[in-house]
Each structure stands twice: as C-alpha cells, then as structure tokens.
Image 1 (cartoon, rainbow, N blue to C red):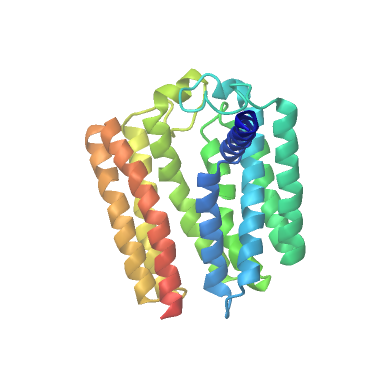
Image 2 (tube, rainbow, N blue to C red):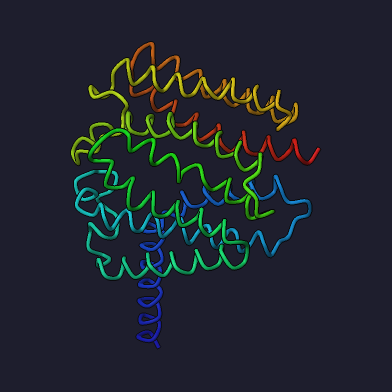
Length: 299
C-alpha cells in the first residue's frame, strides 16, 4: 500500500513538474495579459456578450501567444543560458529537449490559429499569424542586431486588442485601430524600462534594446519620456474625434500621468530605481487604460 502511494506521489510530482515547465515555456503569466487585452478589444465592439466566443478567443489567444513564446525560447536557448533571468527555463536547463519544445510550440501554433480562424474569421487568423511570425521569427533574432527590434516587437505586442475587436465584427474599424495605437505606443517605454533594469543581464547575451548605443544614458531616458508623453495628446485626439467618451478620456489621462511621473524622475537621475518605477507604471497603465475604455462603452 505504501509503495502504491509512493508511486502515485511520484507520478503526480512528474506531472506537476511537466506542467510547470510548460507554463514557463508558454509564459502563461505574459499570455494572461495578452488575452486580457484581446478580450477588452472584443468587448469594446461586440453588442452582446457571447461567452462561447470569449472562451474560444481566450483559448486561441493563449495557444498562439504560447507558441510565440515557445519558439522565442527555442531560438534563444543559448542566449537564455547566459542570463540570470532566463537561465532556469526548461530548455537551457535541459529539463525539456529541443524536439519536445518544438512539438509543443507547433501544436499550440496550429491549434491556436485554427481556432481563431474558423471560430471567428480569416482576418483574425491572419493577424494572429502575423503576430506569431513577427515576434518569433523577426523580433527574436533582431534583438541581438539592432535596437529597431523594439519597433518590430511592438507590432505583435499591440495586435491582441485589434485581434479581439476584429473577432467581434470581422472589420478593422476605428476601435481596432485606436486600441492598436494605444498599445503600440505603450510598448516602447515598457520595453525600454525592462531593458534598462535588465541592461547588464542583456549585455551578457549581446541583446540591444535601449534606443541609445550608450545604453542607460540621457538619450534613452528622453526617448522613454517622449513616447510616454505621446499617450496624452493621443488620448485627447481620440476624444476630439469622438472615438472615445469622457470616462475613457479621464482614465487614459490619469493612467498616462501616473506613467509619465517616473519617466520624468528617470530623466533627472538616470537611476535603475526610477527605471524600475517606469516598468511598474507601465504595468499599471495598460489594464487601467483598457478597463477605462470598456467602462466608457458600458455607461
């Protein structure tokens, strides 16, 4: 009996370890933010909530995002082994073989794209494929070549809310465009703040993400400030064009100001401490901004 229990516990431990490795390979926490923005894009457009559609949009989004992240780790396995923040991932530690990781990535990509294409429409499937290809096959290798990788990476990073909006009505309309623009501009200070905080770690692997060749200097801080500040006039423009209402405007402005304050502080002292504040402020901005847009629609 005791032996049987030990075997059961061993099996459960193995299954748990494998699920944990898959969660790391697919980056489920990052995937949650991606799916969240996609669902907000959908809810901004759809006249009546369809819970089956929400489920399949979430499932397809998780799978495509997971595939993108898995391919990223496959291509960067040698780089990941050099950095403290990534050296314990499944592939560098050899807890998962390259063949197994490729299999999981392929399965997620195929099923995710099929779900999004056939449950919704061809445009959703195409945009999702563009997101996957751009992130995994263009942005990933470009990171070690030129800081323009941030611009390239901002495209798939901003597509999820557009994909959600297009899933709702099959059109790339005004809502799909403006949620893309908001998330696209947000990507730059978000990426750069992470690159600043992890600069030394990235340098070990030859990854170039900060806009200045000198790295953590005033030029990089100015770029972070300018892109963050751009969110303010963009919000006002969307309101003046009647794309958003007053509630959304206030939400966008408040979250942008909260985002902007540590950027100003970073320009003042170029410290890692304030760069970290910018990074956390970027995490605050996006959900607050998107939820504000949704509340504005509901009122």
